[in-house]
Image (cartoon, rainbow, N blue to C red; front, side, top):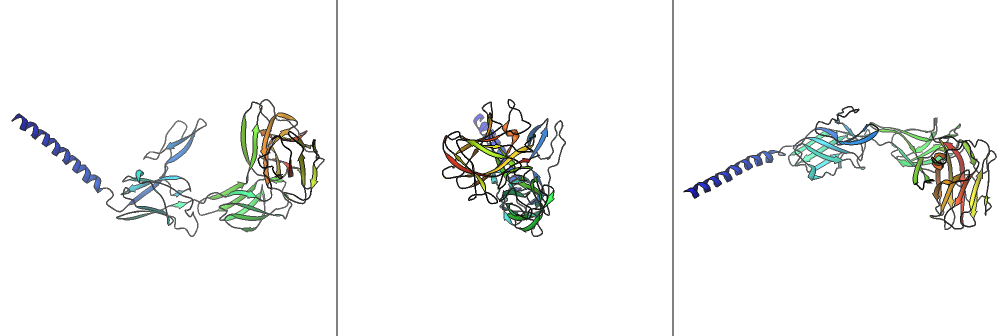
Length: 403
């Protein structure tokens, strides 16, 4: 009898657990049985600054964040940026089979699906805002689909190359890059140029009068997004500091020169010399114009030196700009640039055989705490640092203000 009671209790508990599980299963199975609903879209992360430290916050369902010194925000948005992660909030999302943005299929990870949320990252092949895009986010499941008005912002334009970073008024230079759609203008500093032709990836622009030195600025307009882009981004070499620390740098290119040093000929009293070599004017290879300076290194640690003319003063925003061409067998060969014979601090650059490479080196990269910024230039030294004889050409040399 006692044994029967124990069996009855066990059976009762099993039946009760089954009933609870069945009720929960019925409730769960009811989720996602209807057509999807999109109520809003929100960002998943937001960078905020507190006490000069950048924090990346994962947003909770309330989409707000409070912290001392930080204002709360609502991350709900009706427009998105390419490459950014977003959460779709709604109902019946756990049975999603497809997501589209402006007609393009979007990948989503099923592991992150729930009845009320899912996540997507906007890929680069999604059409961004224009008069021809539908600006619609679509979620599909076996029971239907939901559409939601969502605009993809046009990225800012980016200049990747410029075939000339110096020139005379009337010269036509070619800019290549990305997202030149909706081009509204190109300027050299504050002076607008004349657009000869343009496409989403290339602009031909006529250099205006009055340009000395200035950043190239490309401006685009769009239904959403666009803006002002600059470039190209040039190598500033690798700083070799007196405390044995190395640091690689890049800087935006600047068109023209505040103080030209060499453009087909030396300017304003500047000159060149060196040890164990004799620089010559070469009219067979030029970055621009008709001639460049040809330098032949006789052996390891040979040097080419630029001597100053007028306007050799430097400030905290002054940079040295030049183009250098590697002769035969020079790919990977190293040159160190030093200022005023201060070899405790230098910037290392690399030659490439048969190609011109543009450099812009802020003078601040040629100094450190033990070797302060000088007020003027007495010498710019290009010293061979691979221990080999080699030949290179250098052209379009000058000082610019990178402020």
